[in-house]
Amino acid sequence: MISKLENFDYTIEQSEEGYKNFTVIQCKIKSIEWLYLAAKGHRRAIFDLKRNKESWLIP
View 1: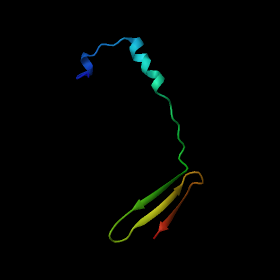
View 2: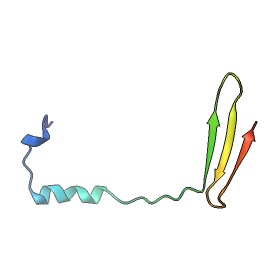
View 3: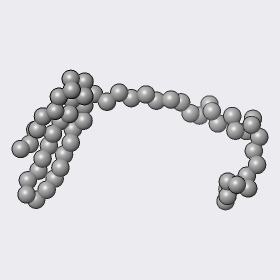
View 4: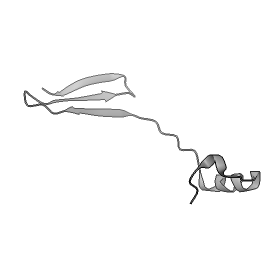
């Protein structure tokens, strides 16, 4: 195990070997549901990002 990255020497070939283990993931959020729990009363809302609308579910 390498204790400090500053003391680690590597070649470009060694560095590029890791690229095969990574990929790009693209996500598109359609909606978010928000929940707030409190002793005085819970609150819950939904945000529809696709239709650009938000609404309270509770209260």
